Amino acid sequence: MKIKLNILFLLMIVMVCLPASAQSGMEEYFYESGKIKIVVGVASIVMVGLLLYLWRLDNRISNIEKTRKGGKS
Amino acid sequence: MKNWIKILCAGLLLYTAVFSLWHPMAPGGLAVSVNELHPGRNDFEFTGYATHFKDAESSLKVFVSVDSSAVYCADILQVIDNAHTVVSVFLPDTISSKRFGFAANNDIDGTIIVDSPVGHDGFQFVSGTGNTECSYRVSQEEFSRFGFPYQPIIMESIRNLMWHVPMWFTMFVLMTISFVFSIRALGKEDGRIDLQHDVKASSAAAVGLVFCVLGLITGSLWARFTWGAWWTNDPQLNGSLVVFMVYVAYFILRSSSPDEEKRARLSAIFNIFAFVLMVVLLMVMPRFTEGLHPGKSGNPAFSKYDLDSSLRSVFYPACAGFILLGYWIYSLRLRIQQLEQHEN
Image 1 (cartoon, rainbow over the protein chains, first blue to last red):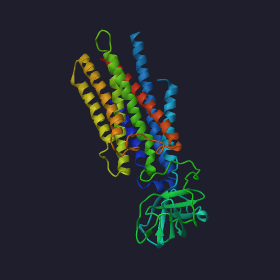
Image 2: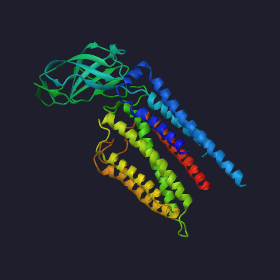
Image 3: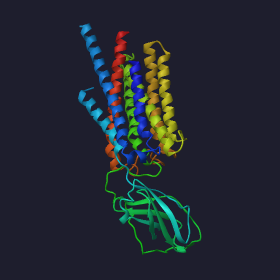
Image 4: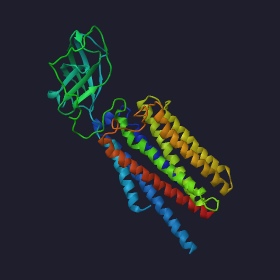
């Protein structure tokens, strides 16, 4: 679980560094050429990945909790 | 945590990811290629940002203003592209002030202003000297498209507002949860420590610390692009680093004692002081000191000047989304810790 939470942390760092690096002189190129759509796409995929990962983790924890409760009763 | 809250969180964060990057910037004046103005003809290049000089060439006008009393129209020599135009302006020997301003106007962008000081040579200054031949509108309301406000230096990096600030808000919320559970852990009637509340407090502090690190990373990157250094001697920056170290100390303290009750009691007391220190360092101290953060001199927060409605439309959902995300991760971590406790 700890390794998974570390992966989550790394994903979040990648995610938040994208807009923080916006002022790098490349922005005019990205907007004028329409490549910003690719940047937005990558950011969205990372975000969707992060959220899906959390959702899956949540479900797995719920399953373990249910198994524990079942085992006790 | 209920499923609809998770879906709401996902929706808000996706909206933030897309629109914080996709929203266009409002046009603005970037620079003029002149260091010194003199009487007679002055030729220079006017550079705009996200402007439409070429697209609106027929309506393009460039002006040089002197204080607020006189405006001199420039002749457009050449429109190079949407962001660059070469102009020539004739200035008289006698003007009213040393304060020059540069502006351009067209039908698409409205009026944009370059706010950079330039030198002067050979003028006679007589107050009240005006010029009525040429006039321009200084209002930027003519720009009707929806875009993030253009601000010199900050420019495109304003997009980081939707990430950096919500990270800190989320940290505050989680540290407040941690603080409340620390008090509740100590507040048992029989004088014993409530270990369940202690676990909740440590889980919230752990996730809050992650958001603190993310806030520091995004802040440091933003500082590099706007202030020119990864770290500056700003009270808010130094305060946030101290807060980070204090909460790291909280976890070191937790790992120092094998006795559960003793560890819980010590860390709960430490956490209460850590929270008070965080409020003082991040919310009180910056209001009493000068700093580089927006709204200096008593107000470290974003004000009407910095935060317009286009930013609010992404910033508020971003805050809500990240706070929900923080709470979601906290609840997961808490459940993992509770499972581990049961296993032991």
